[in-house]
Length: 217
Image (cartoon, rainbow, N blue to C red; front, side):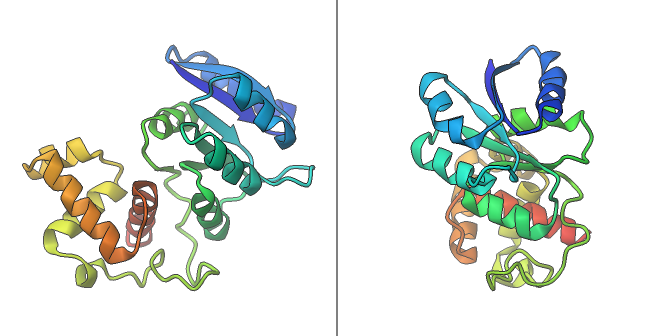
């Protein structure tokens, strides 16, 4: 069972998400919060696998603050952002803060349960059309998340294959099956890709790969 907490200061949003997830046999909503200031108290008393959070709140504490707090104190809790903001700058900042997945509130309701499961499984779930209209600098000088990223120059042919498959949401075991190699070999290539691109985590790698795929379709 995947235990979910919902953090949003709009009651209709919380009720809507709870209603959607209520029909899922493997997902249970164990907490609802309207204020980010209460997140520490809840996570100390209840086991939560996935926190669904907005980015904007009426209180001084922002969703980015929530993400950083949860990741620093409750490392096993994964974070899925569901926000009205779908621009690359907000998504990039959320992912760098430690979010594991990101959905726009304009996305299909049917995606929420899928996003919860994928986030719980340790995958980086991003709504498919988040980056389609975004170009230019990310605001921190990085070019690795833009159209300018030339993976064909940075990576070997096999690494390019794995990079693309990661961007398409495939797991390491599935990539091993597709390419007829062992999962450990996939892991070795994945570590080399992270080193070459200056990436610290698998979540960041999946984020970058997904963004590259979307920008180059």
